[in-house]
Length: 302
Image 1 (tube, helix red, strand yellow):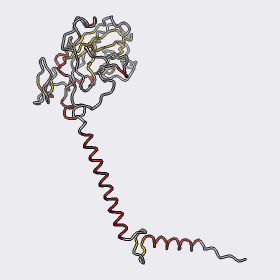
Image 2 (tube, helix red, strand yellow; image 1 turned 90 degrees about the vertical axis):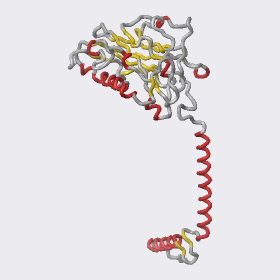
Image 3 (cartoon, rainbow, N blue to C red; image 1 turned 90 degrees about the horizontal axis):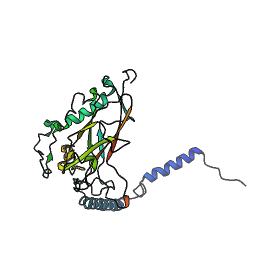
């Protein structure tokens, strides 16, 4: 039996190419990519209407969603509903080892403190949105000024680090809508009774191992941070966030022990500095831990 000759590779290529050319444009049926003008018009109108409907639905959903969003604060808060304590300078090591006579050993810390100090300069608070808050919070659209002079001797150029009495700046994290409350008269913690003043968030620094043992430190101002600076505004509003002044207290440590790690804990105190409880109830302490080593090592050894 004889069979038909199989087409050669070149013949296959020619056949396929001819079929593809007809698919691109069929001059007999006047079709482009298998469709005539009417068919392309119908499918084009269909997808035009489809995407207009989808765009309209998306715009409607976005409009409805934006009605539930405040420009000043998030719609929902996480279970971490109270602020924690934040500390400057930032430290990325387990402890800070420095020699007062070797400025290079603490230059990064000084630069970080200077940034905070400069951000609190009076010339940065001259805009009309800033007001002096005496015994009340700022009116809507206004922000309380912060007088950096209340930070006592914790100031440039060296913030006490060159004398073995380093200063740290302490504040609270920014939590939207949190408003501090006073303690009841009979519930003020013992560790802050001597410095506690109603209307202020008190701070106390102590030895980490014994929380009732006062370390050699002084806090400026002793009463802490006034309630006037809360609640924090501008969580989602960039302009308000840029104008908000972060309040600080300064704590100065008198490190009189050489070449020994000193671990201190600083804690904030207010009547409502604890989680609300419920499903996400946790053991929470608004504090921060810092470790110093006042060293006698030389520049080369450090």
